[in-house]
Each structure stands twice: as structure tokens, then as C-alpha cells.
Length: 352
Image 1 (cartoon, rainbow, N blue to C red):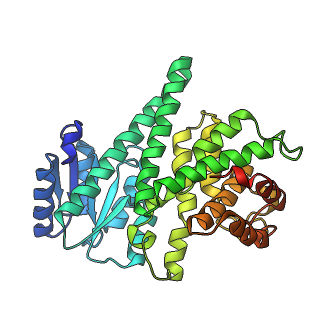
Image 2 (tube, rainbow, N blue to C red; image 1 turned 135 degrees about the vertical axis):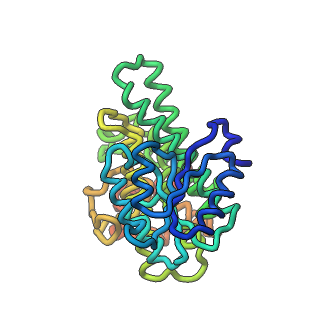
Image 3 (cartoon, rainbow, N blue to C red; image 1 turned 120 degrees about the horizontal axis):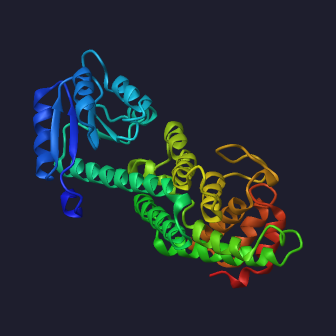
């Protein structure tokens, strides 16, 4: 299905490349998607075009005479009028460090030469859809204060739907089973309910909190949407550079959720989701990532999901519940809050 099938109509896509044949190939691919390609052979020419017509998306070559693709992207990201336009870098280089550098300069995606039409179509289509969703969310947030109660509820549901849609993509990229994520959500709720009955946590865990953590738990790895499938699906051991990229899913996920929250939008679900996405790989003794938090510096929701994620992962790999808990007992006080683990053991028969 071409992107135009989604009903959004023809969109202007700016192609910036100093090589004529590359421009011609990309122009043909974009036209085949029923979109409107506009061509520029340099960064300077691209800026002149953008003054008159803002594109919906930019396909940008990195290595060009004069202004490089990185420099043009920097200029665009510093301008309020153009900073939200997605930039897909195109390059003949496909090493991990090249891809990472592209993202560090503000790129939304990265396509390598020679071009594969199906890949270009897929990546362009995804970025156009994400751009549309982001703009719609920003527009909704601007009208938040003037909305009536029912509109607010509808907006929050749409945000959740978008998060779950993105989480589904991230789950597919990492080859996770949907059933695993369902178990994680349900077991996180069960553990939170058990903690609510404990004097240690009863003040922190309300019924609303329990509902929110059940919904938010399955979004813990939503940041995987920004990690390449080559790294997510790699069977052999990751290199140190690849491991650092992989760890970056925590900050990417938190940023994505934070952008949906909006500056004036206080919402338990969004805040809990952001805490889980950001901190679910922190360890009780401070040895985790990305911030090296320890003990109760780690948000409680992240502690719950971290512990349940470990339990679900162990039992998913053909360990029985008792065997999984025996393994986790050795990790209590290192990876997990020992008081939460004790509650986990008491109610373990309730886990699915």
C-alpha cells in the first residue's frame, strides 16, 4: 500500500543530493507513492526552496560540496519554522557509527545507497505518518485548556492509542511476543495490588495508580522504535558501541512520552509511563542505566516493572515460577528492592 492510500493526499518531499542520478531515482520513487518531489542539488539551494515552500519531509544527502547534509540539518533544527520537519539522511556509508552520527545531528531515519525502492517507500511512509501524528498531538495540546471534560478524556485516549501503536512497532522490531507484554502488564498490576496491602507502600499506591501501571507496563521498551532492527535482532554479542545504542532506548522512550505529555498536561498515566520507560533498567544498588540511580531514587513504577520483567523473562524461558524466584532471590538487594521482592514471593501464585 502506498502512503497516499492513508487518505492524507499529496505531500511535498524535498530531495537534496548533489548527484543527478540519485535525485532522479528518488524522484521516481516518491512520485510512485503519489507524493510531490521537489529537487535541490545543494544545501544552499534547499534553503532557498524552503523559504517559499515548507516540505513535509526532507531526504538529505550527507556528503555534498559546500554545505554538508549535517550542517543543513543543524540549521533547520535551530529554526522554529523548520525544526519539526523530519529529515531522513541518505548516504553510501552504513556503519553503525555513521547511523548514530546521523541521529545525533537530528535525523529521524537513515537510508543507505544503493536505494531499494521498497525500503525508501516504507521509511518515508513511516515518517510521514509519525509527523502527522505529532502535529495532531501538538494541535490538541494547544486546545487542552479550552476543552470540556469529555474532550480531555478523548485526547488522553488518543495519546494512549498513539503510544500503543508506536509500542507495537517497537515490539515487532525487537521480535517480542505480544503475549509476553500482556503477561508483564497483568503481573505488574498484581504486584502493585499486593504492595497496596503493605504498610510500606499503601500511601503511594492508589487504585488509580494500579490501573495506570497496568496500562503503562507494556510501554517500557517503546524507545526501541528509535533503535535499528539490526541491533535489536542481532543474535551474536553486541559490540560496546552497539550496546550503548541499545541502552539508549530508555532515554528515547522517555523523550517520546514526554513530548506527548505537553507542558501543561499533568496526567498520572503519562508520568508513570515516562518513569517506566526511562528507569526500568536501573538497579537497586546503582549499577543500572541510564542514570545509575539507586534505592528509592528509582521511581516506584520502574521498580515494579523491572522486577516483573525479570520474572516474566525467566518464566518465558521455560523456568518454573519457583526456579525463577530462586534465581531472583540472589538478585534481591542488587537488582531489585528486597522489600518488593518479598511481597512478590508471597503473592507469586497469583502471577500468570
